[in-house]
Image (cartoon, rainbow, N blue to C red; front, side, top):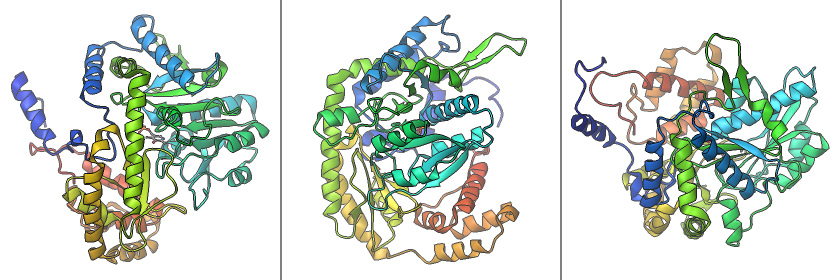
Length: 489
Ligand SMILES: *Cc1c(COP(=O)(O)O)cnc(C)c1O
């Protein structure tokens, strides 16, 4: 692939780009239960206009673009008020939940290093339901992960297990509000009591739920305390690009006090160029996501969000009832947010995902981990609130079709057995290629049905499935000069 010899005309250019988009999921249909958080066309338009309007402004230097400083401090101010932060609470606008979590982990690590100069291997205690972003942060920041089981019935973090995992090297405890997989809220008050007792940093990951949960509470839903109202909560991550419905690239990391945030900020005078002071991971930073988030929050306002929250909460209740009425399908845990996981004793749930896709619906497969068995996941948003009945009909049909296909093909178990004898560090590309082709992945073209692949990933030891996924992505992101984007199922 080379640059076109002559630049393309606008019309031609956008026609091509739209053609590439043909294969994308049509998220405006309200038939997608993941990846998309849709508050309607008006909020979409406001977000896009503000995004485009401030796209070129650079938050690298807030003294040159004070408008962006204003947007950021306003957003953090609204967020800390929303989550019971006091006068001392501060925060930063980041590109997403992963960055917010990474920064909180860095701040906790560096604060601990300062307080404990002999700290050799800083550890973070992670319930099995904690988001993958903490594992990523641990890899990037050289933190040791100490994993603890969650309650096998409620899928909430177990404070006793956390207590037992605390060592002199612990620098951070983690609670989720809610955890993504099952949509349940960890016992933040109990975990915060532990953090206080041991003088530890507690991060509450409210990436997905932090924004809407206070609205759900006002609507009468049972929402246990999870924010800065709980003494012992040190920092909170809250995404805006999920349930505040702003364009992507928008999250917040919040700290109880300003002195905690200091450990997050990077400054560099050791080079010949301009002075670098970065509060977050990015240095050059588009004003687009920031302006868009400011615009959408101010456009929707408290009443707008109450309305969206009510529609979403009602839809969740109808979904939970509907799933429970389907023979062979069980809701896992008791969802406390608009996210629901369901599983089956009778057949492979991964077939349901494929069957739904054939009927034009997107739901998410989740692999087994710890005490959580493999399941299907629904993240609801206002855009699918009036599609629940139609979706449940398709789900009923898909469950019947999945039941007809029965359990796994046996292939997955076979692959897992094969994998057991393979020494992990000696696996080469050709072994991975073989494993992938057994599951029906040929090169980077995915088969229409993903059940076999999911079954295989589900059956493999996790270090091996992680390696396999890395190989797959390393293959996928290669320029193919055939004029088409690679086909993903
Ligand atoms: C989505 C999510 C994250 C990660 O956020 P990204 O914006 O995808 O980086 C972290 N924690 C929870 C609970 C989430 O749902």
